[in-house]
Image (cartoon, rainbow, N blue to C red):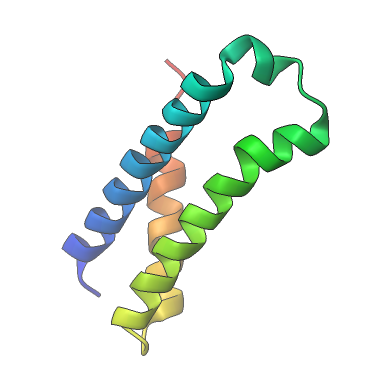
Length: 87
């Protein structure tokens, strides 16, 4: 497997999710996000992030059909490790 490809997709995923989340928070407002019902929170915050990640995984899988599951799992684990430190 190509480690550079894994890092590239992980960084792209983290950067694009940060941009998307920041954009949604600026549009809706952080106070409004906290007071939304679950249905609206799911629609405004969770669903766009899921769709963006699904699109990134789809592009990655189409580029390497043979080892798509290996790359997908590697990107997921690296994203989890990089995104979960509690400072």
